[in-house]
Amino acid sequence: MSKHDTLVAKEKAAICNTYGRYPLNVSKASGSRLWDLDGREYIDLLSGISVVNIGHCPEELVEVMIEQSRKLVQVSNLFYQEEQVECAEKLLATCAAGKVFFCNSGAEANEAAIKLARRYMRTVKERDAYEIITLEGSFHGRTLATLTATGQTGPIKDGFAPLPEGFKYVPAGDVETLKAAVTPKTAAVMIEMVQGEGGIKPLPEEYVKAVTEIVAENDILLIVDEVQSGLCRTGKWWAHQHYGIVPHIFTSAKALANGLPMGAMLATDEVAKGFAPGSHATTFGGGALVAKVSSKVIDIMNERDLAGRAAELGDHFKDKALKLQEKFPGKIKSVRGMGLMLGVELSFDGSAVFAGLREKGFILNLTKGTILRLLPALTIDRADLDAFLSTLEELLENA
Ligand SMILES: Cc1ncc(COP(=O)(O)O)c(C=O)c1O
Image (cartoon, rainbow, N blue to C red; front, side, top):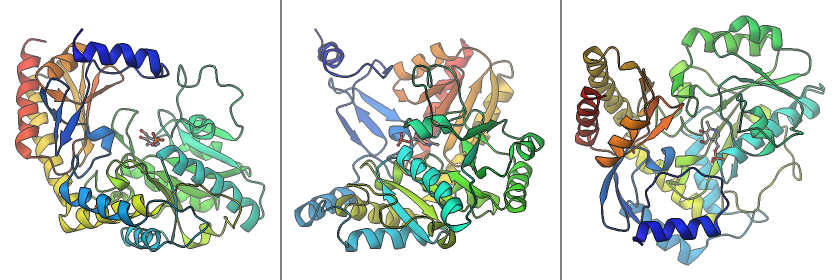
């Protein structure tokens, strides 16, 4: 048996069967390159699903990890820790929020956001408002509450009933339906500025403007899920900054510690009043090691203007991809995205093209069966994006 087949057999025997994995293993990574157990090299256009935004294993982060893990790794949130406060201050300097709650993943950050919205309404506003309205096609996580918040049906929700009460779904872009969905029980509207798992769909500006108006008129909260779109990915620190809005709460995770588990929920000072000691907590969240690494990630993103780089490379990619669309109008349905959160939607089942790209050494994702989703590191070389587009062109000639 090959090394790969042996690993697959052992995985089947030992790991819960929850993933439809690619027929690939990864044993080593650097920058935007991956290598498998046999030493085959791949160009990584997925970055651990928007996680290693500054590339795999950058030396400056490795140094911080080694140094900090000799000093202090984890001591729990019963103690004050300089590393955590430093990280919070750096994060707050990127946005208009006033307070941070650290956790360990995107789902946990969204779970915290839902809990804070409900508790703020009950304890500060003294209103029995708990409903959260989310958008159809959204993805907010896999815990029971965030799964329920997720505006999708099918296998993702099958078999998990009863799901928590208090969630409603409206079609993205439909202002009237949203207006009608708001009741005295509504606590918040929760949106992704660019639906990621939903197929790289940025929300129209007029719609976002209308959402903020509806939220203000009804004195409810706006929660923005920036788990995938945040941390310079879309060409600004946070995708909501493209729209000139200030959410009451927004969430982050994925790239926050460039691969170490780290999540954050950020809220305005006013809304953060909804939490008090004992109302929410986590053992690991914002521990010294992840916080130190995250602080360094934020520094690197600022020093290298990775938001600017994402914007520039994203425009470059989209220009070239649109030319491909002109060449293959019947094969490419649309080219979408913001910064380096990119989607190329094919007009036909994309499985063969997707497999062809993998065979040629490109790692990316296929969502909804037709959308090639790219979330490359913000440090990727332009030449790697160009190589991908040339290979896509070759494959489309014969598709
Ligand atoms: C927009 C969004 N929210 C939440 C999540 C859940 O994050 P996690 O897998 O870290 O729990 C994801 C993960 O893909 C996401 O894309």
